[in-house]
Image (cartoon, rainbow, N blue to C red):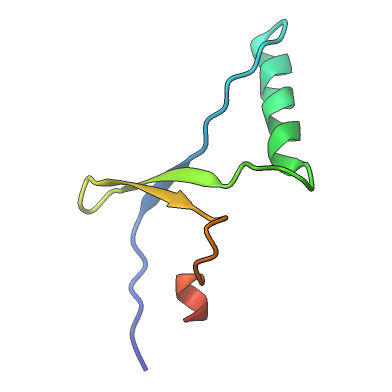
Length: 68
């Protein structure tokens, strides 16, 4: 069995919103990502070990690594 060593990553998702305050904008972004029809599926993953930023699109139909 393969030994999978966990590494540290930062996952970042961005969207532009217009609202009346930072709190309202955060709530709006939170609602966007939680909608059933959300297209909030593209993330930038920062690998702390290598310093590399990797774009990941979860809608592209690729199988998840942990399901391979």
